[in-house]
Length: 373
Image (cartoon, rainbow, N blue to C red; front, side, top):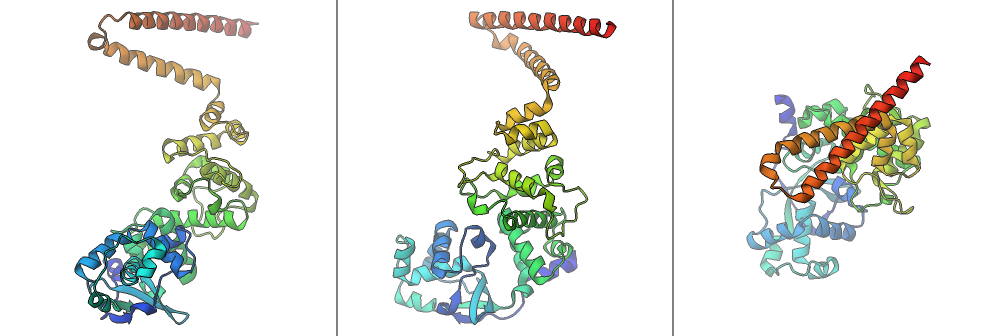
């Protein structure tokens, strides 16, 4: 582990001061990819301002200047200096120095800074390196470190490091201090999502809700019902580029529709929140009858009950009734003050329980007679 931690540290080199006007935002940044950004620099700036709290950094720079130890990490690509780490800082500087940009992105409430302050921001400290030389530092910081990204952004980054740089998943996990197979599970979920997109089974942009809950898929792929539905075994190789067999791609499309819905088809997802809906969906997918009910459009809980069958539901209902009555009896001395409506309710419960008991005895006798016959 000690060796791995040493690898995570950023390069120990003196920063170079680069002209701010020559710096470009990184369209490959996983958080920007998740937000739907393209390579268009003004669009990226607008997204950074709208979604990533650039105002906090801008206010700090306006009040205190740019701290020289806040070094940007930059790579040279296609004749440009692209900022790998520090896009929010670059956005803050750009907006403070350019009133026209502030108007374009709606950042009109930022303070004005002096011409001298603008001059001091004409060049920013940067370390120039290749993406493949800095992946450990970025991965530790944002995947398993102090400034964590969302699960989607983490998965995107891990996939880039593995697929583009050829770094093994075990090596990625070791270098960023992952001891819980998080790297492998995130990569598998990312490749499943990509496979669904490539096969035309699901488009992330078509999700019913604006926010894409990647963690639904990432978590669900560990559940036995989901694994069986998609044909993924527990021993599945996490390193597969196509984790789902061709014959199960239709099921993948169905699963994504249940997880995320479809804006174009005006279909809401059946998963409203990961807990408890994702577990309920897993129960449904274990049962063929319950899955068929879900395919017909029945509610998630109804489909689950169909899968359980009346015998199990009856048993669960009796157990729940007994527990509730035991709890009520425990509260009787301190919770009942002679209210007539409560006494009447208890009378109705008593009659209902007596009827259920008599019906059960009658049903039992019928079963005995059938067996003898």
